[in-house]
Figure 1 (spheres, rainbow, N blue to C red):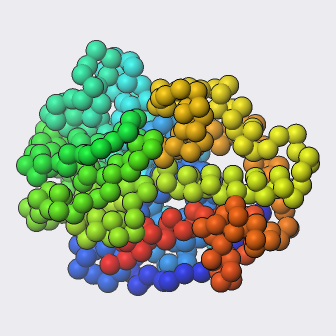
Figure 2 (figure 1 turned 180 degrees about the horizontal axis):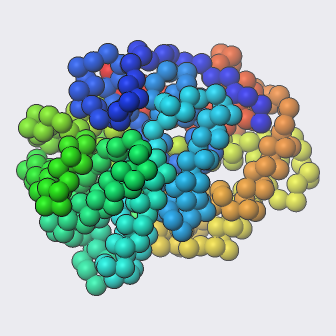
Length: 443
């Protein structure tokens, strides 16, 4: 694909001390020049990561990329990558696009028994210990400890004390791994009110914001669990708690952030001066809402499906353009290939999408939860994407067709900010979402 040309405003630069973990002082960022928070890019899609690196390179700051336990683990996850593989993958993209690898922070998201929760707790936690050891040894320096889910024979949500004990046991494994490898000491994210990876499974109306006392108790009980295992130093590197600020998305709707509803929760940070909050499921929030979240102390903004949703929009628009310009040149369109993959292997969506056949057909391709993202790495889908870009390689796409099929990008193409080529347009689609996140964190 041709190299994209994307322009935009620059961040005020922050001096980066790479001798210690660059996220260790995030609670004090508001009092310093530079950003007040950081987007967390939760995606393993190479185009999303490339767009993120190009954006962060332009802005001159750090880039946080996180792999979830379902995407990447010792068994390969749905990407087929181990943590060491993911590190090599991300650093390979950085080398190609000229992003300084010393500004790349790798995180592990939802590290715990979730991929194996159908097993008894002892077995699932042993798998989780092997996983976090692999993440720590691969140099991931932001580790989200998520042991909130029940395993076989347990309730779906566990008491805080059990969650904290299990989280501390995982931290002990990570600390040992880092000591043995001599790597940078990680920072930890804790919390018991953790949304499931990838958004809610049903249509939502309202969400209950985490109670202020519950947030304080979460930190207290984790501090005790870490201390009980002799991990006081490790807990001093716990920088954030995952709470529910009242944002989420389902298959068909988005719950917008309401600062007034989160006022009491936000105020608790004054009693926890070393902490910020980490906000999950912020996908599809407006720039104003994201800015309000950061201003209210939710300094880590997780985004994943929203980025691949934008990328899918670009791919599908380009697919329609190619089908018009080069009718009959392919055995099947990308959309047709994807539908075949989705229906032949329904395991990643059938539990999440409801309704009759027609409703499920719409959700498979256009749901906010974007479970289609699990299918991009599949060989037949990957080959269809490659065939699409081969067909459009070097083709200057008419502005009028961009207006028709990629309307959100049309103003930037007209303004000369984005070139009218397939690769540039795909990157720009993701970049438009990223710009909201980086702008929200600028302060």
